[in-house]
Length: 101
Image 1 (tube, rainbow, N blue to C red):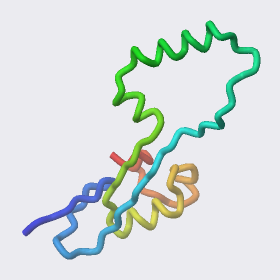
Image 2: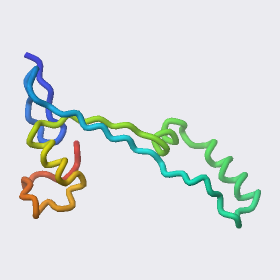
Image 3: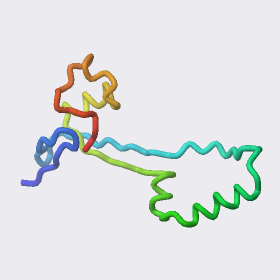
């Protein structure tokens, strides 16, 4: 039998079992504004510096898509407090760090 595994708690979800896919789309907030007091030399230096970076790393800095499998229990807890800011108030398990493995 094939299983999926909850990315949060590790429980095995049997084939055909209830599971949820959480998709996260992270996009850099670019307001397209260049400071007025930047000099041409500073701008050229920034552009030159960017050329030295790994293209994959630069792409992850601008846009990243993530997907996680959650069981029903973890989906309910994630929906109530996705950033784990109210852990004590929501009675969430002690072992949960708020990270999605």
